[in-house]
Image (tube, rainbow, N blue to C red):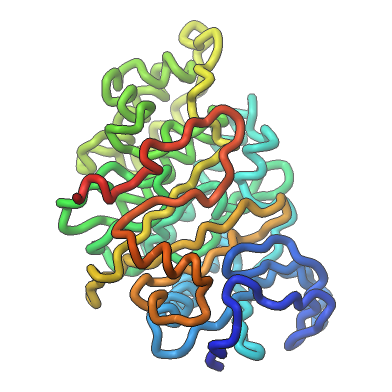
Amino acid sequence: MSSSSSHDAAAPPDFTGLTIDRYELMAIAGTGAFGTVYVSRDTATAERVAIKCMVQAEEGTKAYEVQQDEIALHYAVHEHPNVVSFREHFAYQGYLFLVMEYVQGGAVVDALEHGVFEDKPELAKQAIFEMFDAVEHLHKNGVYHRDIKPDNILCNEDGSHFRLADFGLATTSRTTKRAGGTASYMPPESFDCTQKYHCPQVGDKWAVSVLFVALITGRYPWSAAKRDDRHYAAFLHDKDHHFRITLGLSTQVSDLLKRCFDEDASKRPTITEMRRELESIESFSNPSDCPKSIPQSFPASSCSVHPVIEFDSSDWDEDSESDALESAAPASPPAILVQIAVRIRVDDAKSSSSLQRPLHDYLAGLSIKAVESRSVLNDLPAPPTQVSVAQACT
């Protein structure tokens, strides 16, 4: 069913209390710029499920292709214990409903904010191993997520059993002509405008490495892996000691991270190698290396500025597989099950009357720019020039 142009993409109606198809939409778990997640009940089985509702894009548009890709790729890899289970999807009065498993604990970003992994190295290690399993499963099936981050991973209330979610930026292309994702988790080559092709598989591996830092320290290593980001620049200046000095990590962990974050992608360890080395590490921290206090300006994982890369529609290439956008959705409450974000390709966005006018105007005048999708908390400084890739290209 095609969506009507009269639908407001930013404000789907509240379906709370209604039974649609066989699902009772009991309560809103989270809302975003382009959708809503409901805690729901399957009336046929009494099972609790999560249902993501968004405006159904018009058939034949690129936005429609993005929605269909999200469904197809998620379904292709969902039968894995560390991937959120995808049940089905259906349309109703111009809206699209994605039915998934319900995860009581919510998003890992909320677990980080509540210190669930603090002083629990074994829990953090198990969690990162589960993400290794999930990513290896995706890659073996030819799917690349491209937006791995705590917001898109769900877990139980105690921080156990990680499941990867939100396949809105996923692709099956081994190389893409455009980088995409969330700036804090993207490798440095993603910001190189002279690079002809980007490798989503490499990007996923880098993102998992950033996730590992967040799990064992409660902080992100930097806002973006760019030389004008002072935290990333500090790492480049002293790779051998940076993580030991700033975060009190053990020499073994620091050495592993130095290789995981090598500027040369070919020198970074594989996930298999990362797993093997982590299995032999007994302690993530070293009291003798630990600083008296973590620098107040170091990025906190509970912040977090999550800039999302956006692309100029005038540069659209029909062969490109990676020009989808993520809406700048605000942080959702702890019960959120899947981050609300419908990726819209910019050239389609310009012609779509269902988009918010301010977003339409914003995109029309930019090439590549990062926007904040979460509020700045604690002492995290704003990323330099809003982590803009456009500067490097002009």
